[in-house]
Length: 76
Image (cartoon, rainbow, N blue to C red; front, side, top):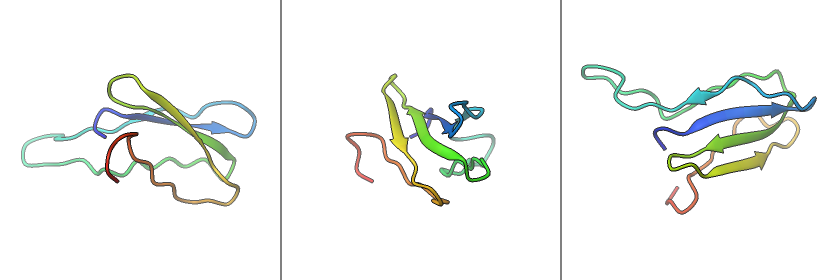
């Protein structure tokens, strides 16, 4: 969802920098709906602060390279 802020909790408990999903970056342009975060394989969880303030945290299994999340209550 546009406006969602995503960050990763590492295995040592520290957090990555946050990325925010934007739409309509300029004249005749559109930002990607994919957020790319590189953490070197030590990601433990993904936290998303959705538009409206809801915060979800999803665990990440070891070795997973891609995760797809949908805003709670939306159709994926």
